[in-house]
Amino acid sequence: MLETDSLKILRQALERLDAGFQSLPANPEDPSDLERVSQVLDETAERLQQNYPYFHPLYAGQMLKPPHPVARLAYALAQCINPNNHALDGGRASSAMEKEAVAEIARMFGWGKHLGHLTSGGTMANLEALWIAGQLAPGKTVLASEQAHYTHQRICGVLQLKFEPVPCDDRARMDMHALKKRVAHGDVGTVVATMGTTATGSVDPLAEIQRLRQEYGFRVHCDAAYGGYFVLANNLSPETAKAFARIGDVDSIVIDPHKHGLQPYGCGCVLFRDPGLGRYYKHDSPYTYFSSKELHLGEISLECSRPGASAVALWATQKLLPLEKSGEFAEGLQNCRAAAVELHERLTADKRFLAGFPPDLDIVVFAPMAASAGGTSALSRQIFDAAAARQLHLAVAELPVRFFRSSQGQMSADEANLTCLRSVLMKPAHRQWLDRIWNLLSEATTEVLRR
Image (cartoon, rainbow, N blue to C red; front, side, top):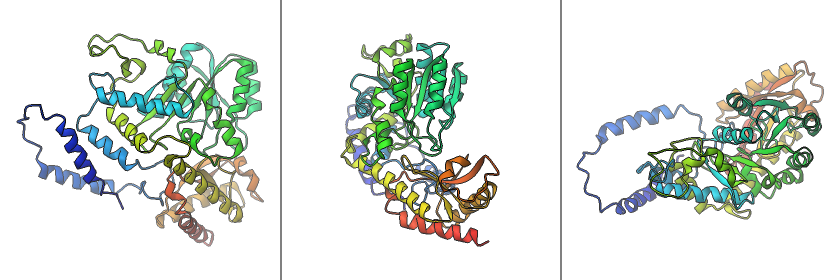
């Protein structure tokens, strides 16, 4: 099941890398005890079998997408040197590769001039974006949707920024009436627009947020950690495409290459439209930035040591799969989106299910029909287990009952929330596997409903 043929390519690349250092004197140290290493690796492989099969199309649960083989190989190749992209003297080649890779991501959103770098993930990237927001609008409030990632409220607590959630509509998008009422009240410095919420993949109406921005003057930060790459997809709904078309107008963007960018964890990215914001990162380090007068990545990042291997893997992936609307990478995203739309259509046509609202991206939420919300929650957990017994791995989530209003039927809302099933169809292969996924889900549901 796991791809191993590419290891031959890695060996060739290692020999090519080694050839570049042949002028060095031989290292007299003995290599590690390979027999003991082998024993430990065998035990490691045994332990790793205890995971869910995240790499397989029948894993359709959480946001876990396997890295592309070229990313794995490039990462492993770089690990032989283990560069540190904090300063150029610690990651001379990998720092240049990071700048090139980040610039390509910025161009994907229409940005030429920009300030940006890789981070350990979306949380750190959002922290940097909100830290800058706090520097530019001290004492003012940060707003984000109540369905935005919980990290925004937590980050504001760390940064001692005021934070308020904004209510959502019945499709888990930021409610524009509620937002307008709040920004009209004043004291708002930044509005966070989420382009793909973690729970449902919902996309906030960025065009409408930008119109309010023109009237009330707040900054807009775009949390596109999950959904940002869908700016390349050509099969979004008109409403969602309209939102993505405005990403280039925001002040800052966060995107996670370790989600839809086919990278190993952790690899996030933060971008600022104004390159001059680097002044807020300025600091002195008498022992670090001596090797070059060029900008060191550590001079525009809150993190210090950062893995150069992440930058190398991202650079290699984007070299193989450029971020182009008509390219192979974009086609993979379109397959994910198409799989989600088809699954939702099948759920809508099946009276056993509450189908929820149509997906904006590639995340589908649904639940079994029952007489009450409490009953639906119990059945969802049972179907989760029954599907897993068939090697179909889903996820569960707790969401407001009103998100399922369009297909609620006679179900009584005895509780405000219900436990539902959630499927993240973020592997391009999910489109080809959808018949099998549906059949296994149907079998599991039939088994549970017959009990």
